[in-house]
Length: 508
Image (cartoon, rainbow, N blue to C red; front, side):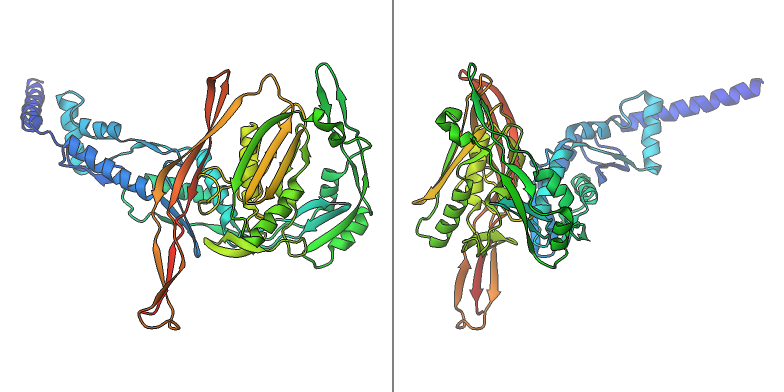
């Protein structure tokens, strides 16, 4: 027993002796020990401040570059600010430095020796707003040039117009979301490009029974009640003018657009018949300007404004810009004008009417209405600051808001002499706020120059066919005030506007 005790004591003494020596050797070491990484980036043999600078540099480069999403010729860049990304780098550096230093002699020596043989990786705590990712993915999908176009419908006079959708792609959203999160957290990857995962999809069959259920209703007269003043909205009675089976036969034909007759029973008294008393107060207004000498754009804006003017939205009802304005076609009187498509400025039937939807969007914001659906343009617009526009496209992108007020609202719209003006009238309520909108460009996306070879030009000659413009990221806030005091400031949207490239044709 004596020998065993002596042997054990000797071993303990030797271990303690070497531990003390090992500690003394490392006592003056102010660098991180071997085989330690932060977010898979090696930091061994470096001082704490040096590492803090290096990791922050990697993170800031990723933040500046953002994440590029690519699908065929389509590209867009999303910024870390839009995704609400924040990283606790300092905590990770402190944790890496504390390995082999935050315990007693034995545990410190153990951790130092352990790291020689088994690498250790410290993950940075990175926070990401996943709701912002979901919103940006939805926004990106709506802008893909070959996106699925769903069936849609609207009512025009006594007809139900149903437009047939087109097959296209949809984004595999959960897969893309995971790729974006992985890219944010990968500090070793210098390529910030993600190929958007998509699937081919066809629109569902037109469900006339579901559409009938959504549109059919009994007529209801509008009326006012006094003390307090209340407006009760009218509603026209709507029924299919033919049987469901007859409607299904019409839909069996191979057509892009179908007309189903309706039986409309007009309300005897409309809200508009109640006069200005039903809409005594201006709740929100916005004015934008355009080039009145552009005849086609002027024509399109005028037609769309005439459709929008006088629209009444009842309490709880959701307004749809596309269903109110209808499809933009040559037959409907629209003409070709400049519009954004597939990342370029092109001529499109109905081009320009996004200015009306954008002007309406600002009026709706200032009325503090609930925004249901809104998308920003691919490029910045000239008529409103970044973050204040609302693009539309038939069958893919709509602008919608809900009347979350107690009483009906009326939209007055006009487009003439280079001015688009949208007013929203209704009855002021005790719980109304003064609304202001603030938008700010948070970063700049520099424009690039694209050269296209054209042998029809003289040698050395070059012609600029498209003048570029910088893109940007932006944040938009809605501020509510009462009696001059700010009650709340809420984020409305974070948007990315791509740079419009300068395109130069040349014969080099």
